[in-house]
Every structure is written in C-alpha cells, then in structure tokens.
Amino acid sequence: MLKVEEQQPVEFSSALMAKCDEISSRYPEGKQKSALLPILHEVQAELGWLSATAMDKVAAYLKIEPIEVYEVASFYSMYFLEPKGKYVLEVCRTGPCCLVGAEKLMEHMEKSLGVKEGEVTADGLFSWRGVECLAACGYGPVLQIGPEYTFYENLDNQKLDTLIEELRKK
Amino acid sequence: MARKLLLEHINVPGINTLDVYRQKGGYRAVEKALKTLTPDEVVEEVKKSGLRGRGGAGFPTGMKWSFLAKPEGVARYLVCNADESEPGTFKDRYLMTHIPHALIEGMIVSSYALGAKTSYIYVRGEMMPQIRILEKAIAEAKNAGFLGKNILGSGYDLELYVQPGGGAYICGEETALLESLEGKRGNPRIKPPFPAIAGLYGCPTVVNNVESIAAVVPIINDGGDEYMKIGIGRSTGTKLISASGNLVRPGVYEIELGLPVEEFIYSDEYCGGIANGKRLKATVAGGSSVPVLPANLTLKLANGEPRLMSYESLSEGGFATGTMLGSGGFIAFDEDQCIVRNTWNFSRFYHHESCGQCSPCREGTGWMEKVLHRLEHGHGKMSDIDLLVDVSKKIEGNTICPLGDAAAWPVASAIRHFRDEFEWHVREPLKSLQTNYGLANYAEPIAKAEVKQEN
Image 1 (tube, chains in turn cyan, purple):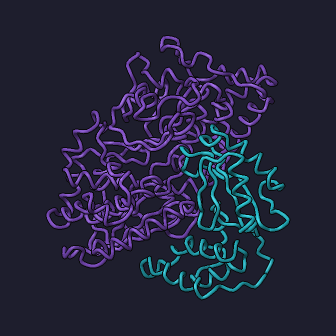
Image 2: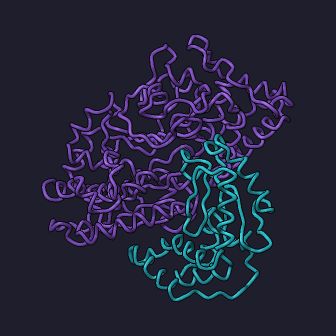
Image 3: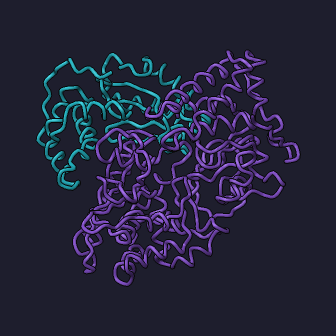
C-alpha cells in the first residue's frame, strides 16, 4: 500500500539525475511525462523501492502533480511501494509454468527462505513473490531478480537452493 | 526442412551483432527500401504479402498501414508492441534476444513506409535484458549510419528508442500501450478514434507486434509476391510458434502456416511429442485467451479432416469445435493435468490483469476466479458451472477492450468441452483434491467428440 504520510528524505545520485535527463530527451518537447515509467525503474534500481518522497521528487522533476506519479506507480506490478529484500525473487505462477512445477517450486521457496510470499527475511536479503506470466513459458519454471531482471530458467528445488546460496555469499 | 525467414540464422554465432547480421544479408531491406522504393511502394509490398498481425488479432498489416492518416505538418509514429505477456507466448522475447537487428531493421523500413521520424519499441519492463540488447543494437545501427539523420544519404531521418513498460498485461492492448507510453496508467481508450487517426500524443500512429515488423524485412528483400507463396490461403508466410507445457521439446519454432497440428506436436523437427510418454489431453493453440480444445479436436476438425496451423483451420468450426491461432502460444496439457485447476489459474491471471475500467471485466473476472477456486478446492456446487457460463457471457463483448473476451473465452470453452470434469469436481470433492480426472474420452476419435448446446 502507498503510504504518503511517511516522509523519509531521499537523495538522487548525480548519475541517476543524468540518466533522467537522457531519458527525458527521448520524447518530443512538452511530452516529458512519457519518461515517467523508465524514470521510476531507475529510481527503484537505486533506492530499492518507491517511497512517497521519492515519487514526489520525480513529480517535481517532470513538472507533474504527485498524484500522477502515485497512480502510475500503484497501477503497474513492477513498482514496489514498500521496502523489499535486497533480492526479490519473482516466480512465474501462470498456467504454462504450473504445468511444469511452478507451484511446487514456490512451496519449496517458502521453506528455503523461511518467509511467506511478500515478506522480507530477517537479514533483509530476500523477498519472494509469485508473478504473472513472464513470457518464458517454454523454459519453465522461471524466476527473475531485479533491478536488471536476470532470468533463471528450467528451475527445480536444487537449482533454486544453489541460487539462494550464491546470492547469500555475494 | 521448412523454409525459415525469421530464424534462418538463429544458430550463427554472433548473429546478435551488427557485423555478423550484415554478413548474413542483414540491412539489405533498408538499402533496398530507402534507395529504390518510395514509402507507398513499401506499403504496397506489405499489402501484397498478405502479412497478418502476429500479435494475436491477425489483422492484415498492410491494410492497417494504409489507414494511417497523413495530415500536413503533424508527426506520425510507429510503435512496436513488444509487451509480450500473453500466457503461452514467448516468441518475441526469443527473437529480440537472439536477432535484435531483425527487429531494428524492420522498424527502419516500416518507419520509412509510414513517414515516422521518431519510433518507439515498447518492451515489457520485465524484459530488462532484452531492453539492454536492443539499446546496444540500436547504438550499433546508429554508428553504421542506419539510424539518425539522412540515413544512407536518402534524406530520411529516424530516431528509434526503447521504452520499458511497468508490468501490466493490459499494455499489450494497443491503446493501453499508447497511454502507458505517454506516462499514464494502462487504461485502454475508447475507439474510435483509432490510433491510425489519433494515437500517440494524439498523432496518427501505427502499433505493430515485434514479429509483424520483423517479417517486413523478408517481404522487402524477396517481394510481397514471394512471401505470399508461402503458407496456405489467407494465412501467408511463416509464423513463430511458442510451444510450452508437457512437450518433449518446448521452445520457439518457425513454421510455414498450414503445417498439420499433429506434425507440429509429434514430429521430431518440432515438439517431439508429449513429455514422459504421456498422452495429450488438451491444447490451447494461440495463447491463454483462445478457447481450449480437447486432444481430438486439436488434431482433427469436427469432420475428421486434419487440423492445420493456420488462421482459418484453427478457427474452423467457430467456438463450438474450433479455436484461434492468436499469438501462436501453443500450450499442451498431458493426461495428468486438471482442466479446472488450469482454468482457475487463467482466471486469476485475467482478474489480476484487468485494468478495472469496465465493470463487467473488473467484477466478472473476480467472480469467475472465486467460483473456479471453490470448484477446484472441493467446495463447488453443480449450479456453479452454469453460473460461470453466465458470468462469462456477461463479460464477453461488453468491455472497451478485448481483455474481457480474453477472460471469458477460456472459461466458456473449458466448460463447453470438459463439463464432465467440472461436474466430477462437484460430485467427488475429496477425490478431486487428491487425484485428477485424467484423460476421459478427450483423446478418443472424433466421432465421440460431442459438443453440447449452450443456452
């Protein structure tokens, strides 16, 4: 849920601001609102999630109302409106992946990480959730990890545990 | 071996780079179009080819292009729909990953044909790796003079950008995609006006699927007439099919339209049959939105003739005994799969992805999900089955965009062909929790495939 009343100050790095300028230049003059979705991805990649303060900053940058940012961020499934683990493991839970074992994989994920869907592990490292079709149905079960949305295909319990171990050691 | 137009060089090492792509004949279509053809001549070739939209609707691409309004002094846009999200479909991801320049080249030729000076490729946000691949390919093309000002000295300027989505199936609908590209929620627009008149920023716009745009390249290279010779009837050319589910070799295959479905499923050139020595129970031939068919009707038409992978043959028999080619997302279910569970899963998907604008879809998808959930989990009533049909009929045709139909069809078709399995879930709730209904008579010869009359 979006919590607008919580105000934690945030800073955007100069690299992020430069990226925002580059993105804004892709659209015709006066249509810079088009940059909103890509900019939100960049902000989330840097901060891990989209706080109301961060969204207000984006609104000010694009010279639009904060509500125009909130309504977009809350519509699309990729934007996090609350803090998540450092790694968010997103498993496809739609039909074709379920035919090849996605549901069992999610059960195993819950056991391996020891947290329910949407929760964060005590060390702050991991969250996981089921997401809808990731357009990789022939290679299921699949999962992705943002912000670069690295893809892991043809998973089973063992491969998942290995992946979790590797991320933990990073 | 069948003829390949899009994936011919898929296994060539380095085909994702401009150099190798050009060694294999890449960017010939750009040279040919910009140096020897007028924009209208390019449109004419695409019309002649008979190419139909590869995103799902199957609308003739050339005709869509010819509807584009061309008022003086108003910018025109080409937007590529790479928001591939239809469950069962993953061909665009495959093409963009391995041969990104095929899409870039198609975008240049198509933008030239339409007179667009700025074009966007709207890629679903989850495909960040593909976005990086495309951005790199665009930079390569620009360095080589295929993008930017005065391309190949032709006087034609084009800038091409990649736009990430935010994770919403609805943005695959073209007007929702345009809303999203304008930085808004992905709510489909009321039509008319169609994007060809008022699209991106209110300007005339064409939105085409990745595969449609990539297909423009061989059409220009070889001519629309040559392209039309491939395929069958009004299903011309080749099509990428995404095969998933319980198959020996799931993956993306390029087929000549008109290939028998049986050959596609069982031949070693394609899917290699059903995995683990099981038997085929059902298929969804064109992505989750199209009607599910039992095995017998998948392989044969109601009159016993073989069914082919083409727009016409797959829809032969209407929704009573047919389905649709859709986006080419071919999902195979083996005998151990539960149709009720899968229908519930798809309903949950459509409920999750409904944008919420139209009440029949916003509320109806949720009701269907809940009713299917209780049927699947042993709490269903016999009346629930007709209730589902009733709800699906009240969504179908009553929404701004086709998501409503897409949500209604899988439910209606599952009950049409697998009603006995739904009834079994109600009669045997405990058993249905522990085991599956199995194959029943779905794979029996056609004579036994009975289609019940719907009210």
